[in-house]
Length: 548
Image (cartoon, rainbow, N blue to C red; front, side, top):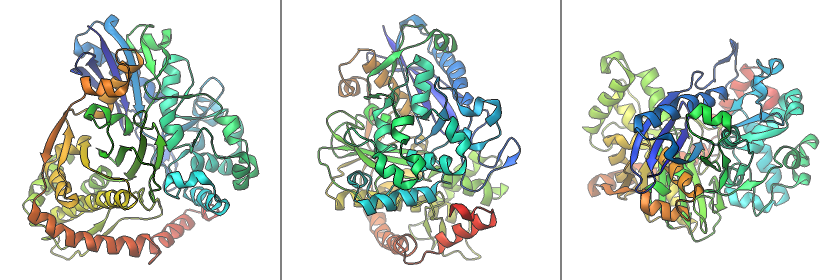
């Protein structure tokens, strides 16, 4: 009997799961929390400016050393029976390294330099660079821009790299490779550096076999012209391919053996589609956690405004893989509970979430009189603008915490409906909705989403979607299945129609959604740029006007 290991590197922790190759049964799992978490306030006691989000790469290695052996032990399997290991990561989470993959932050001279650390996916301080990237590409008529909905995000590789070059030329000069964390961890496991097709396509603008040209990059900054050829110059690996096998060092970390095949890296969202058997056109997969990523395969290629990209084979071979997303979802609920909910609702954060959900579920649709915009972390799709910010409209002295909580949940559901309508308006059908991630456990959230989008919701029959998806790709890389579709058929599983829309509530939500669309146009489409002006004033207050 053979087994594979999937390792999911999330925003705050890493999770490993051991899966039986024959049927996808989850045998055991373990979680390891990053010691340093998200570094967004201070670095080594020095304050960070607004919109920064860093991580420490050694935290990722501790996941390999702790979660993987613990998962194998909990599964009760013989490590010699493990044939493959695959990983997935948040994206775009990226770091500068030396020739041998050493992170610059591990060097003594850079240990206090924030640009030497991992820039997490929600690092939004490169928005000024992202704006210039989009403006120049549009001005030049760069054809690759259309694949990304006409906008380039501050979360992606180009903007974050350009920020390092312009903010800290010393770090840039020391950088040999600009590495996605998804590829860095595979490098550490196998000793082989290969860029995965998923992040290269969606986050690095690798389109039709090419990165943006040196001429274009030089137009952003003359010293940026050789970015692709000097810092991204490694082969592209396809999803489900083998990168290599475990090195002796990595085998010692994980408690496995050097014959274990290591798969090419992947993204946490995209890797979650196959275990839910979402491998056919029109099946929209929502990975709902701190943020939400929407991924879907299609047999049609269209230009969809504000999407995070469309990549051939980006999810499954032979189909166009579309990505959209919301930068803040669970993060927004967590922010409110931590900062705006009194202890009378519960002693712990989890107790407060449960109590708020119970109270909010008793309300009729529209009963709280509120409308919110879910832009507390900016808007990823379809506006691609991280200068935007959250709004709660309609509060009175009678407004209670559960009212605001429900309004925030509804706002994220409206955001998803806007994404679905944007796909459909562009000629890309959405026929099925499937959910995975931590938020699928909350009945209030799931029912509101079903009502707002007017679609039944299927759910992945597992609490570990990304890790399970990685395990499926490990099975393919190890040769147990010919392709990811075959692995999904044998090892994947979903609960169909887990949540059904209520027609009466859906009708009420149609009226509320119309008001949401009005606010989107007013604040997000330049009806009133007050949010952007406030961001500028904030940067001025922090002495960062030069980056505006």
